[in-house]
Image (tube, rainbow, N blue to C red):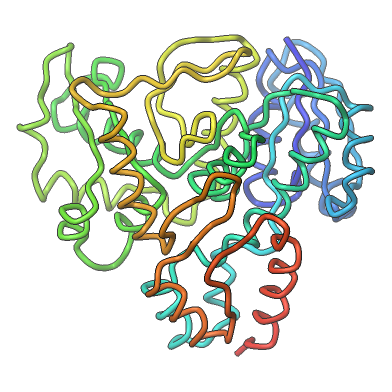
Amino acid sequence: MGSIAVFGAAGQVGSGVLRTLAAAPDVTRLDAFDVKSGPLEIEATDAAMIAEKLRAQSLQMGVGVVDMSDEEQLAQTLVDAQPDVIVQAAIPRSWYSFSQILSPAMWQRVNTEVRMGPWLPLFLVLPFRLMRARKLAGLTTPVVQISYPDVVNAVLGAMGMAPACGAGNSENIATVMRLVAARRLCLPTKDVTVALVAHHFHAWSLVSQEDDHERRVERPFRFRIHAHQVDVTADLDTRDFWAEVKGHYPHKRPLFAATSAAKNVLRILRDDRSLSHVSSPAGRGAGFDTRLGRKGAEVVLPPQMSEAEADALIAKAQAGDGIERIEAGGAVRFTDVAYEAMKGVLGYDCRVLAPDEIVGRADELVARLESARK
């Protein structure tokens, strides 16, 4: 039993988290925070109505308008709420909005050459402010941070502010793999397990319009599939299997990231150490099978995979997302291809993102997006 605070509760993912947790009997209080008061009231009311319909127990519902750029206000909000778990779902701009803002030619370059890496300030700025506000408030409350977690959480970890975990991305791959495997084997999903180490890049590669087989050879992820504890990976690892996984992947369906976040919140709240796939546990920079609890995350690597091999997998995948490396201390260096393409598309010149530039670079990207509006 416990209290959850959701920031970005009026957004597509945050509202899904709010609604899912409203139905969970483990949650006794749910605080919804956002900068947009009108949409926030609607989403909080919907969550309260879901709780009223589906729960035997009452749910305390709190609502607060919060400007996350004001770290002192944010810290006071955390002190007042005293949540057991925090969910960070706020972003200034959604990745999926870029295709509506940029011309088709610009969007094509962004999606295939720039990738998400150089846009990092937009996805990092609010989690960065939240983690600093948590420190200012003197709290160590676990945070489930959803915004581009395989990179954002790794950067925050390099700054000494790692969230407990992320949500979505590679977990969506693991879930769909399990469902497709169970269907092909004519087994209940509970009899099938998938061990997976994968990155956000792999999720993007899977849903791109091209055949992603060559990309998976160049930047592979690691997986094993078991049925009744028997390894059936070799039987299932075919182009047909991956075509079916690709067809069922929940692309542009925010509920799946939301339910992933809710699952992780409940694992932490219950101190449930059962194994599940988790995006970026403890700022690891990829998705791993993990045991989550109130005392932190325990990553479980697949058999015969070393830490060095996991690090190499992450480095290759990050490069596919436009990131050359994350430095100790949190500076981020982008790949030559991503840097040059971003400069060509928007005139945005940032080879290395330093921690003290995050806020200014985020503001610059918003301005450049607006000036490029088609």
